[in-house]
Length: 275
Image 1: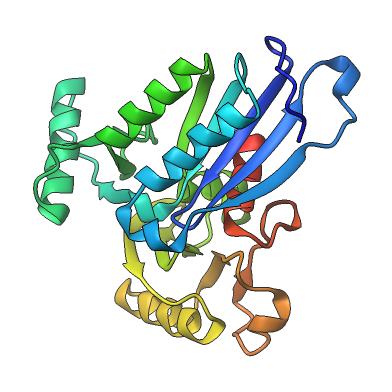
Image 2: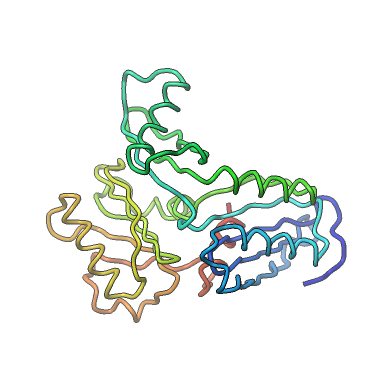
């Protein structure tokens, strides 16, 4: 990657933030660069620091920005589901104001995770009368990210969990069909069940990402959510390929990773680049 200083508005960057890797996509903007392919790369996070959470990865992003003198660009960041907490907030006709909605959402999180004082919670707008997905990210991470980008004069237009980015890409495959949607990465599997086009359940579990473990996990989830038989199941796991799932039932379909990227962090960065 070039080390030359970037002109204002001449480039955008997209980052995929995993515990063990940072995926990077750099794309020149403007009419003259419309056919120029983006530069892609993956930066490893030292194994010895992975258990320290998001801080080592953010330090690496900071050093990368310094090394390539990146400033005055737009950015998007897609965050591993490992760093996110999820909740499904039921519809309540008694909640009419934004403060009541925020209180209901935080109460939902606290019933699942306990004290959420140090977390920033966001609720998807959703549709009237239906349950909605809510996400929570550590406030310290968001504050540190904001400070880092501000120091480099980087305008971040999106920070989203990988589950959200993936659903936005593949949701049209469901329509009004009942089924299960799952994302497996960083030893975390987020599973959501959909019935008649509406969210019915949402939960994240720790799991291995090999074909056999995921097969068992997904079949168990369909039973827990009251499906009769094996419903339509769509799973994105960048660690798997078609040959890995040859023994799966035909109702289970593997969603291919972004841009044929085998590294999860790079697939995340590509999903943010397409947003």
